[in-house]
Image (tube, rainbow, N blue to C red; front, side, top):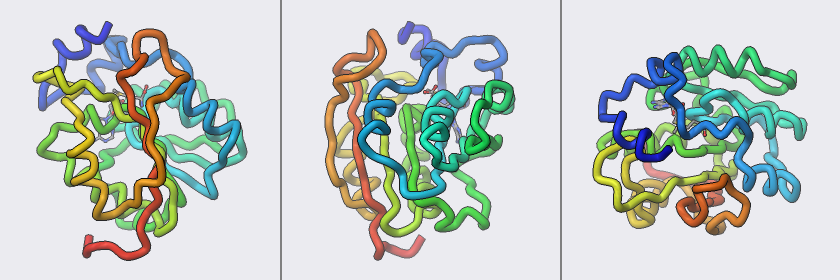
Length: 207
Ligand SMILES: C[S@@+](CC[C@H](N)C(=O)[O-])C[C@H]1O[C@@H](n2cnc3c(N)ncnc32)[C@H](O)[C@@H]1O
């Protein structure tokens, strides 16, 4: 399943075409099990954004807890499917490029959840991705991330993810609160993911 994902992608991946073709091996049809577990013990403090939300399974799980969530994806087809399945009035979806957040989103969100969006972003765009998230999340906001760690893969997506790079890109904007390898995950992903819980810093370099 993952080899298909790796083989088909490139820097100019047409994500919408992949959703239209049903070529979405990353989509397990349900929210990430560790997110569901996290939500049973924590809550987001207010409206959050989910970049690269795909068909919206995580958005739905978060929305069910009463939190207002905006799922954003570059694929119109994914957003269309997410809207079609929408089961909570707290769940909202919008097609768009997270690397180009609208001005109105500056410091709008009290948190974010990312689930394998980072590994979909070409490495050259990752500094921009970290800055975009820092722009839209308010100081003290929570950034929960499920990073797909696949350092042996040279061709992506998924592009390789290393802890050193995560530190380099996110540390200027976020304080790492804790990190862990999830014990609840999809079959086949065991040991390949890293969850991180960050808090947006109140002071930061100019964005
Ligand atoms: C590996 S998939 C993960 C999707 C979803 N989080 C899930 O787990 O099912 C990566 C997602 O990021 C989206 N994506 C890629 N680049 C993006 C960008 N610049 N802005 C918004 N979404 C993007 C893709 O369309 C795709 O849905």
